[in-house]
Length: 301
Image (cartoon, rainbow, N blue to C red; front, side, top):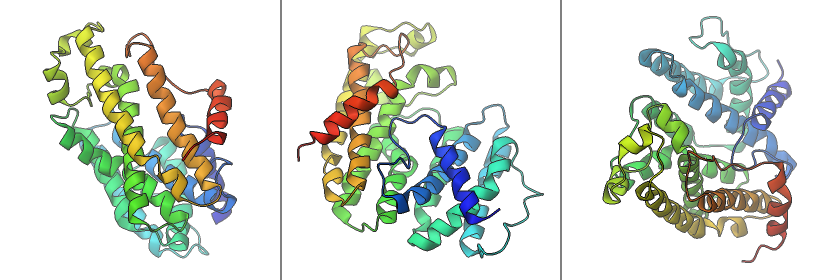
């Protein structure tokens, strides 16, 4: 497999997964797309490894250990040579098939863009936490998770674009955390069926929202008030991070505008449904594209 073929596979992975934001889309400058796709493929596959609920916990940890080892090996690898031997991999399924290409492309991306390895390690640490931590007592704990599960991706996109600005990093962190939280609120019903709840206990307990209601798929006024409060806090993060779309140059700002608008659009849809996640999961589709494009063009600083 050549490096170009490896990047092409990462691009296909980026386009075949639903997200609330564009991934390596044509809005990005062409030179950036393959690098963003490689980062996404790495993160998406690692997240899936941690999320395989039918696989024993110990095996999932071992697979993430291998994922980390492959990450470090990919940095030192000479891409002119064939990819390392994967015959003894602990991975299986799609991860085993795609991993050689992912790390071939990612190693090239890390070296070409001089990306900090710590950001990739933060992602894996968050995915590893997902294996055993299924509830959060406080906003502080949840924000620490988002700091590692979401924020590194935004910072990596900025580094790929050649941006090294502390204020842009902070704004990107706010948007990435807001996107992660938005995903938690829209997927509350799905996560609950899988034994997870990302709404901080301090929030739903203060509103008197009973967990037993979720077991009965009963959407109460207390739960509506809880998610409304969570959405309000999420909107504040989007507002704080909005400036990142104006702080970058060229076509990247269009990708970041679409990302910001997509996240806010999901929150708007959630609000219109009365925050009833059992009745409807708010999501974006092709019909949302014209509105997002329109508002991107009308964007005000």
